[in-house]
Every structure is written in C-alpha cells, then in structure tokens.
Length: 232
Image (cartoon, rainbow, N blue to C red; front, side, top):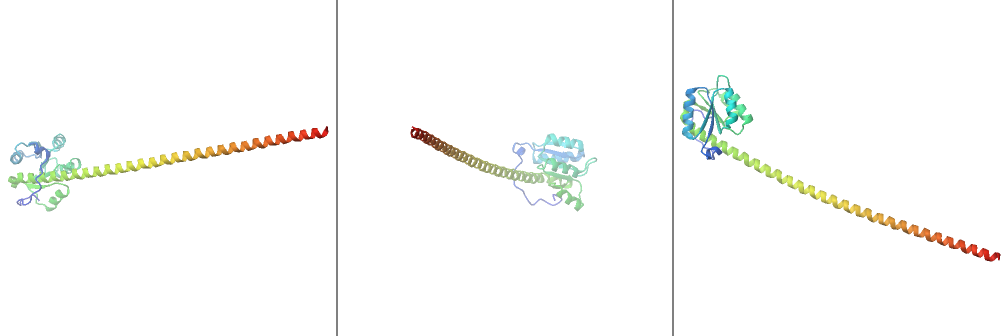
C-alpha cells in the first residue's frame, strides 16, 4: 500500500509530541544524493521546521538512529551494504513506536510488498509519486501518534489495575495480620487463665494437705496424752 494509488483515507489528526513543539525529527536512510534532495524537499513541504538527519549506510544509520530518536524513518529499500528489511527489523526490535516507511524506486514483487507489511513497516512509497509524500507523512504520523496514545492509555489502565490489586492485597494482608495478632492475644490470655487456675488448684491441694497433716498431728498428740493419762 501507499503505492501508485491516490490516498482516499485519513487517520486521526493527533500530532507527534515534537510536532506540537514545531520540530519534526526525520531520519532518512538513502544513499542517492539526488533522491536525498528530492525527499528533503517534500519533507520540508510537510513540516518546514523539520530536522532531517541523513544516513547512507549501515554504520551511519545505526549511529544516527541512536542519538536522534526520530519521529519517523524514511528508508530506501536497497542500499549497497544494507538491506532495508534489516533496518526495519532493527527499528522494530529496539524502537517499536517509531513509524518506518520505505521510499523506493520500484517494488513490483507482491510477495516482497507483503513481507514489508508483515515485518512491521507502515508501508512503502514509490519515488515516482514523490509529490504525495507530505500526505503520506501526515497520515502515517497521525496513525503512529494515535497508536502510541492508545498504548500509553492501555499501560496507564494496566498500571492502575496493578496498583488496585496491590492495594487490595496489602489490605488483605493487614487484615490477616490483625486477625493473627488477635488470635495470638486470645491464646496468650487463655494460657494465662489456665496457669492461674492450675496455680489455684495447686495452692488448694497444698492447703488441704497441710490441714490433713495438722489434724493427724493433733490426733497423734491426743492419743499420746490419753495413753499417758491411762498409765498414771
């Protein structure tokens, strides 16, 4: 898609953050000086304050991608030392939110076109339709911004849900700890009561034993006294 047919669809008009500030960062992977000039001209038609960073081989692309963190990547499909699909796969692995568009001279193989889409590119654009590039960029950037916004909203909702569950678990844990503490206090109180009861029982037993001993002693003394009196 984004080939020779006119554009008849639009995406939400949400703009990338940098465009709201008046600056659009574009990384252009192109080794043809002539095509670089033509593409830059169309990019500036779309956003006159664009920052356009050009890479013309693997090394410069990987370096500039890292320090630029562009809002969009425009890439030729075939370079001398770099396959456009390799560049796309690298971007999708490390910078999945950056839209990637191929701008190429010819791409007539339907299987190759399908492969581009399946690998994660936003589409491809033929250089013969260069005048349509501003419209393409507007649509791709709007869709990317909307997708990123939806992703952030999903992450926000997921974070809130995780926080809610964590709070519920904390409350549940605190309640369990409170119940365990109350049970421990109740057990300790029961053990104290049982100890007091056992102590009282032991004290009562000792009292009875003392009384029995005293009674036995009194009886012994009385018997001895009676025996002595009888002998006299």
